[in-house]
Length: 399
Image (tube, rainbow, N blue to C red; front, side):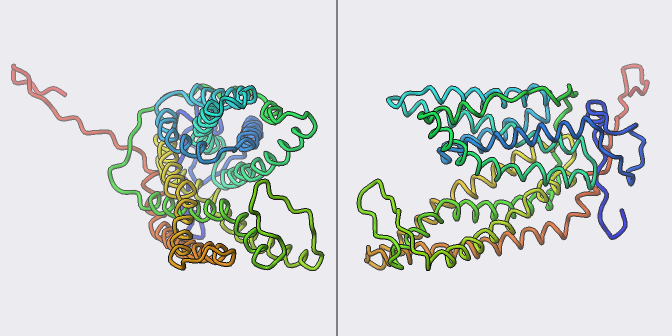
């Protein structure tokens, strides 16, 4: 164990050493940390670019998330069993082609646009499950945590640029489809090398660090999904109750008026909301880093895909619906459909996020209790199965 009680990370798998060449030899001391190679930095730049472009087309989130979470276990299994280059190239080609082709879909065929969004979600799941394991193979120890942090920064950046660039391209070209065509087709094999397909071996004993961190990130996804979906409507209803904006009775609803005295309160409110999202997002890269050194390299992609599946299914995919049910139940119980109770019901439904946050914090504390033990188990080399001698027909003992 390193100084300060921090457990050492498990060594890289032989397939990763052969494929990426980030270690001089397999006998290198575990406590030492070698500087990343130039190829590793080129790879992380390419992965960050893909992550940026990948999250710029998250439209029709419900269809995207459903296909994303159900295809993640499939790509996680394939990533551990077969060549990661082929698996990742298939996923990138799928979402790139689906994004580009969706710009040609006419307005008379909306069902086809929904299908294309689902294909984008399926392709994105391959990148989300395999890319972190590639970073784990290319970088060691402290470098790994830094590179994962840089990698995950591009998710919110790409999501924000998707709204900004798509609207700008639409205004400039006069057609919304150019916002999808501008994404382009990224280079798929600029950083990947052939890897050996290893056998998948899932541990029989429960990995409490993996379970606790997965439940914690699920609670985090629940909160971010609920607030991200309902917060714009909540702020609109607050403006209606305060008399800043008139209620909208017929679509489309636009407001061009501006009241200077409310500018500063709105700025302060935005800062408080941003701080909550900032502290929630601090866990993002750390949770993935925890998974990579408490799970054996042979099944990291599968474990990551299961974590993605659970965090989306029980987190941001279901939380908006759950919050909506609570708000409607409160409003129906009051028997009042006024603007005031439209605001109050949604405000009271957000209280559930506080309890979910406490549960998530408890799950991360559970991870802290077991993380050293589980990291040692993941770092321990696999023991071969004992060979039982067999006696042949002549009475000779054979192996």
